[in-house]
Length: 563
Image (cartoon, rainbow, N blue to C red; front, side):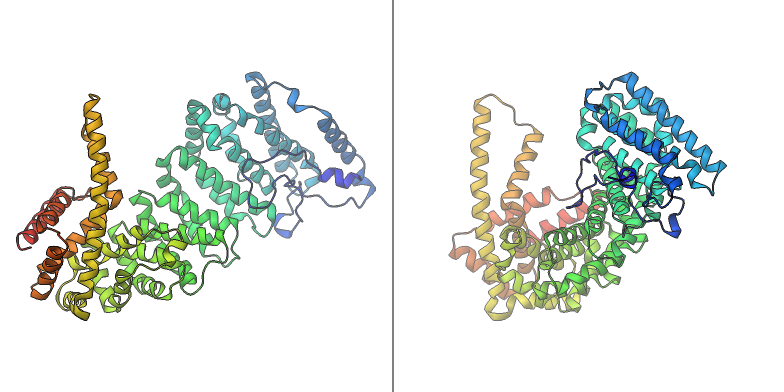
């Protein structure tokens, strides 16, 4: 082994989050120098002169050998060790900064100091094993200094800092000491960690493996912090993260682990968060999502990872559509046309397209989308899916119940929202081919009624046992039982009954006669349908205004009167 190889050597420090097949144990200091980063000094080439191999080289060689000879396992890490480490880090950071200012055009002068700084950052990984001492990082100002290094001229240093932050914020570590974790996360957020990390990612070149790893680790830090404190998603999105994610997702680059991770982080940011949904809408994010998903219109994802990314993007789109303003953007971006094509193409994307369509047309805010869907001949797409649940659905891990729930929800939304000619076109679908759609509707009614009655029996048994044991069935328990009934099929049953009641009130005698005929034939009862709809009306309102809730309840009761 010659001196050049030894200079390239770095002790193994094993990362916690492997990125695909790539190992991150390679040194950050093995990159080729380009015009862009001539200032880097951890980048080494083979020695080409006696000068380089002597002097500095000998010292570094000696130090590396000494370091390797030490047994780090034998050292006990306690408060004083951590304090010494932080002090050494501060000194080396200051010295490196001083030399860079003094000799900006002479890397040889600050090379040694930069190596020292990199080494101490690697040593600080040991702090991640003792989260109860994280407060020292904050009290001794190390967090502030680390954040400052995220904009260091040498990206090897900023990547080393990101690596360290990823270890420190590992979610399992954070849960070991909630107190230490809170202190660290507070200090990071106060120092605008997300904004600084985004600026750092902007300058990284992902065609270089080490820098691509740096991007991956940055996203891991964000995921760790968001999992520990979900409230920071809004702040993170506003500090440039949302913009960077959208830009990275639409970048014309081959699919890789980083693109998958970006889609995951995007879906996390949009969960239960109207502010981030609004931000994405304002940044034309709906168009970005639709463009990225349009690839899967006629082609299935090539790998399991690509399929996961596709599902993350669909989830992000569903989240966005929960904000009324985004429904309009979805409509203008021709989202309905894309979903309609996907439903016809019978590729893997069909399952998620159905879910997106459901989110797009639901509630009074979905009225425009409902009318547009009929105009683009969407009824020809949705009714074959209503008549027969495709067998392929099971292959992609979607149950019949899930499929039938989305289809019934879409038809119920259209019955609620459509007016005029479009409504007539929808109702005529139920009368064609000797009312076959009504027959299918009644088939679903009895299928889910049976499932719910079974669940009710089980729940009644449990309630009986609880009363016998002297336990009190409170409101929380009742809510839990109701959720279990919904899960067993009550929600689909409610949608089916709603469609039934709507078509019976449509002023088409043929439809009403057919519904009552099948109910009588199969021993069903109008009373049961009314009971299901009353229960549905009572539980209406997902945080919407009281006014909406009351008008909707009144509307359902009027429909029941004429049923």
